Length: 482
Ligand code: GLU
Image (cartoon, rainbow, N blue to C red; front, top):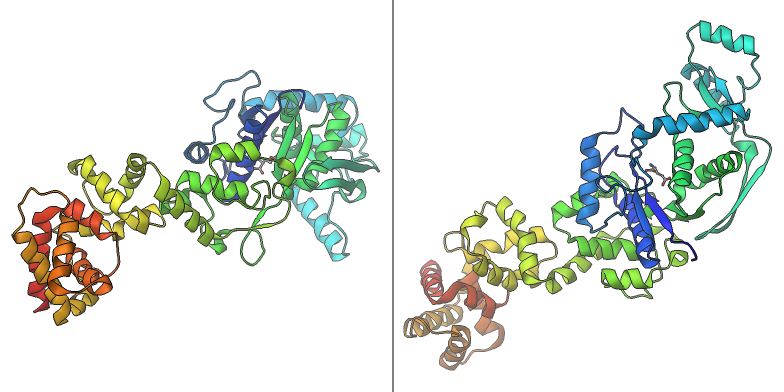
C-alpha cells in the first residue's frame, strides 16, 4: 500500500454497541494497525430523535474496554474534524448546492402519505418499491406554488439509466443495475442529510481510503458510488464483510440472547477474549488457531480472508475462550477485573487485603468460565459464609469419610501453628493413618473444608485458609455429620 491507509468506524449512537458493530470496528482497527494506517471514529448522529450523547458515551466506553483506540474522533482532535456529523451540516449544504447547480438533484415536495401510497401501489403490483419521479420534472411555477402552500422540499438525486460496478475486496466483482433504485433523497426537508450523502461527503473529505463495513450496506454502496461519480470524487476501496448470524442462520439479534458488548462485559467476559473471538469469527487468516494475542491478530490480519461467509455466533465457544484467558491472565489484573463482581456479590472489597485476594483468585481461576462465576466460589473462603451442601453432609455421614476428617483435625491440632506447607503434611499423615488414597481421601476433605464436592484445588484452598480455619471447619463438619 503506497499511501497510509485511512479507515473509519462510523457508529450511529442509537443503541448499545452490538457485537456485530464491534466486529466492524475491530476489522477496521486491525486493518489500520496491520498496515500502520489511521483509524478514525466518526459519530453519525444526524438522527436527532434516536441518537443521544449518553448512548454515544456508552459506545465509546465499550470500544475503549475492548482496547480499540482511535487516532482521530471524539476526544482526539485531528485535521479532518469535526467528527460528529451534526456539527458538519454546513459542509453537506455546500455540497448539496454544488449538486443543485449541476442539475443533479431536484426538490421533492411529496408528503409522507403520498410516498406511502406510492409504495403500497408498487408493492400491490409486485414491483420493487422506489420513487417514481413525481417531482422530477416540476416546472419552476409548480415548485413555487407548492412552496406557497408551505411545503418544504427534500432533495433527491437523479438516478440515470446506468450500472454500477465495483470490486469488493472481500466479495469480488459487484454489479448493480440503477433501474431498481429510483431517485433517492440526499437531503431531508429539515436540512439534515441522508445517510448515503453525508457518508460520501465525509469519507471523501476525511480521505478515507478503505470502507470496511457489513454486507447489509452493499446496496447503499451502489448509491454512494453514483454520488462519488457525480461529485467528481475518487471512491475509496470497499470491503463488505458478512454479518454475524445466530444458530438459526438469521441475523444475530436479541432473540438469540446477549448481543451487546455491554452484556458480555457485565457477564464477565474479558475484553481480550471477546476481541480474540470477534476477530477470528468467520475469518480464515488465523489458520485454524483459536487463541491468538492481539499482536498476533494484528500481524496475521488479512482483509481478503475476513468475514466472507456468514459467521455463526457461538456463545459456548466464547465462554470456552474466556476460560482460557482467565487462566492465563496476569493475576493482579485478573483480581482487579473481578473486584466489581465480588463487590456486587455483597463483599466489601476495601476491607479485604489485596494479597489475600490474589491467593483466592489464584485458587479459583481454574473453575471460572466467566468473571461472574467468582460469586459461586468466593464464599468458601469466608468462615462466616461457608456452608456445607446437602451432598457434602451426606458424604461426611459415611464412617470412612468421617474418619478422614477426624484425622485431618487430629493432625492439625498437633501441628505447630506457624508451620508452612500444611497441605502436604496433612495429606501424608491422613493417608498413612487411614490407608486411603484418591477420591476416598480427597473428597471428604474437600467436603469438610469447602462444603462442596467440587471446586478449586485443595492445596490452594489450604494455603488461603490456613491452619486455624481448617481446624474450625473440620470440627464443624464432624459435628454436622454426627
Ligand atoms: N452509521 C452507519 C451505521 O451505523 C455507518 C455505516 C457505514 O459504515 O457507512 O450503519
